[in-house]
Length: 143
Image (cartoon, rainbow, N blue to C red; front, side, top):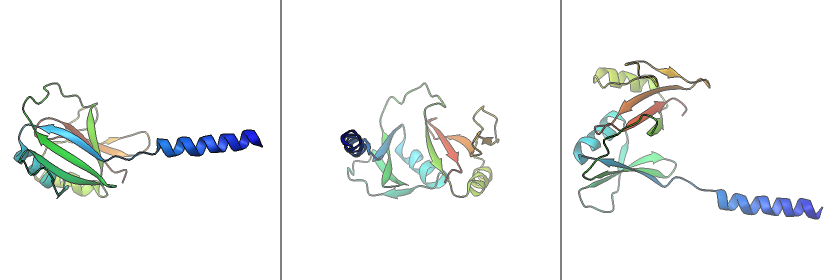
């Protein structure tokens, strides 16, 4: 009984320390205005209050109390890998793809097939797009 109590106490203590949540994700951009247009008009994010008011930051609500911060700064990294990406889940991915197609915004599958959708082994559909600086975004229907 003492061992069981110790195990339960340890589990409760460890789980309280392990609980974290995403506060924000920061993305380096070269041009704040073109990136704002992309994240608002193409991705459909809602801009939220930006406390710095310095003309180089924009913040967006990405759900669950988390935010995306885009920050304009020089020296954008030149090596861009699809493995390093942001992922957003959409309720209606078909409508999102239609928006991309109607605006001629390119998207591709994980292997890089233009205009194609990847279906993961778990059945989730996903596509990849790039922001104005080449940062990869995965868009999937795991909403």
